[in-house]
Image: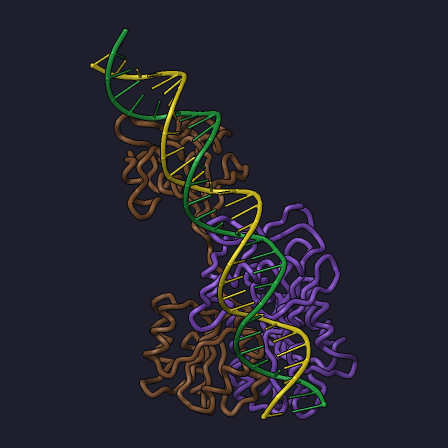
Length: 224
Length: 224
DNA sequence: GAGACGATGACATTTCGATGACACCCGAGG
DNA sequence: CCTCGGGTGTCATCGAAATGTCATCGTCTC
């Protein structure tokens, strides 16, 4: 579990990461909003610890903006301000917790762990065609309900075909999307299609060869 | 929004309800676990504020029991104990927040409002998959009932995998979430997986390698 | 029936994961 | 300050699995 700490105070820059690391969290440090943004853009975190006031602005306002764009990672604000209204602001902004300075490191650890545990769950997109279900996140394929295990290339090819159901897909198109570098100089595509077909033996052939053109996904039965 | 306060201290019996009412919450009071149970049975609350120690027992233990039976209402524990392990206990029990006495009433209000807003969603601190139980708070793992001691990194990796059962998890995903800085440039992940597997020798291999893609938790037996 | 193109089985090659051994770092304790 | 040891990162190697290549066969079209 990985945490980003955004803190401009020299002392806390040391203490906070140390505390979190002692709880087996992976910690990165940013010193202002700008560098935090950079880090958030590059990596994905399970939690962010934000000092409320930073040299280049109020982190709360910033997070509020990010939330509007779908930013879903839980945030813990460190704040020196003690008035109730300021604290409430913190929660309104979408932050999931806050801590008033000065605080005990144990308290910080407990709260961060709690936030991390709560992490955002994402639904994997599933593509369906005929009686085939392809789960891009799990990288699994089911035909008529039964699990079919595919090799990497086979999966890539099927994924591409299923993203363009019933459309004609040329060999070079497949090579461009499923192979890297300068595509192979053989009939790999054909071979892969053959292998794919043999794995999907659990119903009619869904992959139609179009002579001289390429391949196309079809649903012979029509139903399902 | 209706809140139940369970408190035996005379002073707090007055102060806590008063504070919450000032935030427009409807408040009921109970003085011990027995009467709290009665109130919970009769009414439905959006939040419960439990003093940790009550004349007829430790409320934490009690809530733990209730959770097992599906009790989902968020709980805020008031505790006088200040050690980290005691605080962690509070979270393990399924309580969603805690406050150390003495506390500012504003803080109490903010936290209760936050819990109420969050609604009855609990993320149990124990994740189960197949015959493995992982306690995120205690950082312990049991396989088929027997305790397995893991190293920090091994635990982090297993935790991440178990939070996404059966999903494909890439190496870079693991590195992003379990390592800091810009991840290492070696096969650490593979090595850690190997070590993890060897610790979990007590049943079939649950970690499936997906060639060229990453790893995935699976349950070969299907049962349990 | 001939040519072209796709299908397929067999085989070669490449890539990738598993693993043992070792090096390094850091914290505990003398 | 030094040593020791556990935990973790790195490397080299091995073997198996995935994939590319080729040759052959089948089949569709003109």
